[in-house]
Image (cartoon, helix red, strand yellow):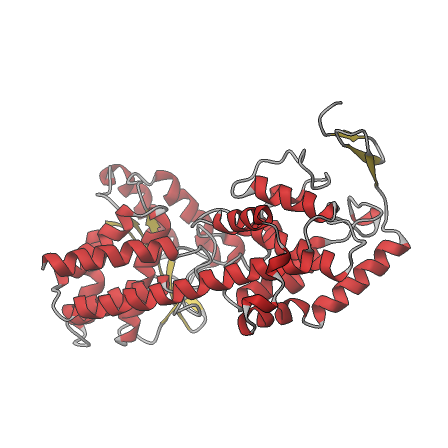
Length: 439
């Protein structure tokens, strides 16, 4: 018998199983039955279904949650899916699985393979599908974020566009994705064939996510306590070394450099040395984006306008292209006075860039700088000491606290970091302890 495969036609898809069974998915506007199922699911979610499930998992003993009905193999698959979350991948698939388990628990007759539904005129749709994107953005991602179980992008899990292809979710779903792809597809199959109880599985996954959140809280508290002990004896050089080593020794160092720079500016702001300005919250996006009104990664705002901006450039020291990109952004930010790039190493070929930088300065009436991270840090220290608002020792200590608390999710209004931070916090704790012991 042939392996499982998908036949795609103009108006339908057919999922053909190895035993010869065929499951047909018709394209077109949602049927009356699909619309009714969607209303049932949406009402349950809007009435707090997922919130209630999370509270049940937080307050009831595990023995009352029905986990005994899961086979050992079921538990392994669910554990491996949750365990696939890293600092960069896996969150969207876990959130999608949570939503699919909610859907199947609320309305067992709804296929969780069909993630698009609606009027055909509005785009692709399956007749028996539902708009999972809408359900997620309204009822899944916001709840998971509110409980700090999954730090997803606020726009929702379908920002991972590979999850939105016009094919049913099955073992032959071809879109490339990182994370627990195999575990997710195995769970989809088990839910659809009825061998995996959806609500018990949902509670099990939520319990694992809650446990991860609690472990992170305890780890963060330990790291911050170690930081306090370290700061009681550390000098400025040692504090800077801890942060710089953490950036270089961790995965996704470019993002950490942004967070470190933003944290130092938070410390400067705490000492009231921004002349009435305020630090703009750290962007959730990976880079400054004109769509979001950003100039750079670290910005100071006064009277609603950005007046100073600094962009982190990790691993790149020649910035010809970046200067031109900046010139494209400046026409919409005419109040900015100081803009700069901060490189992780020494800037390169500055004499070559100087004429173009001067043109931009004259055109927009700004000061444009390219400096190393070490020089930028010293500039911020000087900002504080020149105004007599604190010592270098004080601002350095506040910097490490702001950096640690940002990574520990303690400063989300200013630093809404959506990447899972557990490994970052573990590494920071290790470095702090090493420096404390060596000192």
